[in-house]
Length: 328
Ligand SMILES: C[C@H]1O[C@H](OP(=O)(O)OP(=O)(O)OC[C@H]2O[C@@H](n3cnc4c(=O)[nH]c(N)nc43)[C@H](O)[C@@H]2O)[C@@H](O)[C@@H](O)C1=O
Image (cartoon, rainbow, N blue to C red; front, side, top):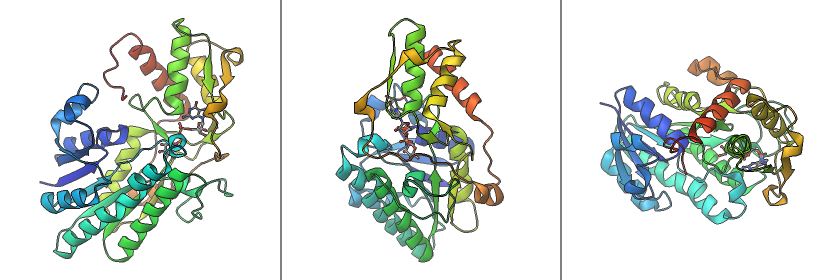
């Protein structure tokens, strides 16, 4: 039986990935850095895998776990994925999203040197491209991060290339924002959909946002993680941009979400909160997933309107229920 280790298994992507791996008959181990009892109420799927307590910044501990488990697949999804927060905690972001990665690569390399066919998949990020000149970014786009999160991810991305060149099966997935009802409230998709639903329910009278002109390529998280599984099964590791190829502004997201609940005149309901503006924010990030389409037979099926509809529906549902599936 294939054994997989998923770091960041308590996060949005970690959960979907673990569930898809389990469905494929894989034995799944996950690294969690909070007590399991605190995580289980909002992440019931963790009961179906073997959880190990630890923090990727304890590089010795993570390497020891890899040596002990001898996994066939390692998916590194650990990290504080909030770009905004990385400005307030740049050292922690650097430690978790950057410095932690080579220790895992080295431990995987040791297994490979002993004959194990181990495959490493890194959750990289479009933020490594900074504010790119190219309207569509691909695997050859220059790496020029403009925020602490992007810099940490860029370091990890380059380390993945270095270990791949040394012979390890490593794939680095350059992910664009990808959403689901399990997305943390720190992200704009949840901020918008929760705010719209609160307004509809009469719980507040306006929504506060930061830079609404930013344009992003939003995808559907459950299908983004499929690409990770497929990358691990390729004959060789590679870099893959995983994106829809279509960008929309935050303002368009807001308009679409309000339209879902029948509100056309939304502008009076939205205000700018200067505290939500970032020191620097890419004007537009939009990916060309041509390589993933060709080599992984991966293509996104959930478009922007459908994505917003699903998120608004989930937020409406959660507003009348205990928010079981929503991460806190
Ligand atoms: C590729 C990348 O994708 C994600 O990072 P993100 O794009 O920064 O995600 P977000 O939802 O925080 O921001 C999206 C945009 O929305 C703007 N924005 C406006 N007003 C608010 C606002 O009120 N809150 C937030 N959070 N953003 C706002 C904000 O300035 C930015 O332009 C992560 O998966 C990350 O891990 C990753 O790798």
